[in-house]
Amino acid sequence: MGSASKQSNKPGGKQDGLDRRARIAELRAAEQRRDRRNKIIASVAAGVLVIGAIATGTWLVMDQNQKKKDKETAANADIPGVKTFGELSRTHVKDKVTYPMTPPVGGDHNAIWSDCMAHVYDQPLENEHAVHSLEHGAVWVTYNGKATPDDLKILSDKVKKTPYSMMSPYPDEPGTITLNAWSTQLIVESASDPRVEEFFTKYVQGKQTQEPGASCTMGQM
Image (cartoon, rainbow, N blue to C red):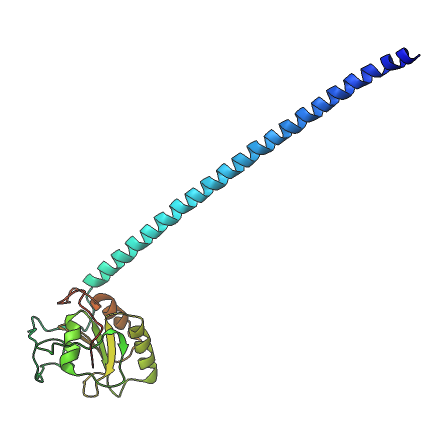
């Protein structure tokens, strides 16, 4: 009986072994399928990131190129009302200078410039120092008593965020607001005049600059 009992258990044992191997094979196949899916997903994600990076880089280059073109277009565009005064002398002097235009936009000037690195002054500047700043490519915003508080707010906000610009009162000037660059001048009646922005775009370190890149800091009033 003992021998018969052992023989009756053998078929079941073989079947169980086959079933286990089949399950193991199935699990391995499922794991391989998951690995393949994960690799495909990772490859697709990496591709999307690469394409996104290329697209972003391309957009940035195109955006910079467009800004450069816009700047060049603005630099060559005429601004209605702008006056120019031709070639002006650039000698350094120690004495006061009598200028032919008010405010002055060029001519002999002091060896020390006015600080023009986005500087808003609450007192008038010395002409001879301010003219030197214009030589360095600065835009000088001046105004008389007709300028409104809103005008002054708009202009001062603009100057404060624009290197190579400065602003100061000029009580004796004929116009409400005057924009000054080397040998160049524009009078406007309101800070909201669109020509203000155009003037800044064209003349801050513009083609009229006599000494491009020269310092606008470490000056005085």
